[in-house]
Image (cartoon, rainbow, N blue to C red; front, side, top):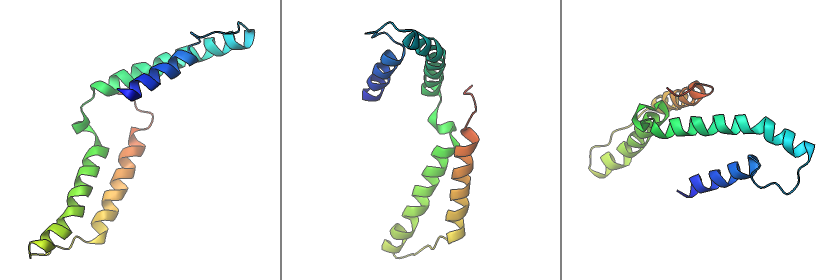
Length: 108
């Protein structure tokens, strides 16, 4: 809730609703930034409706937490399970891929 309020305040200033001066520079800034800000908020609205369970980055994080908890929990229970380092490396590569893959994509 607080993040939405901060975003709304920032958008309010950028959109030029508070206009102390009416200079050509300010009008040009508002005319240039308003479409970009509106486009950004449309993307944010789409992101809020996207299910987080469809995200590769979320699944990578969940698997990382589970793998990180397996070793100490299994050792505490008396049946140690050793997760090889290469599993974490592949998980890290996949996480980076998921983040890079999401850059520039429009949300459907």
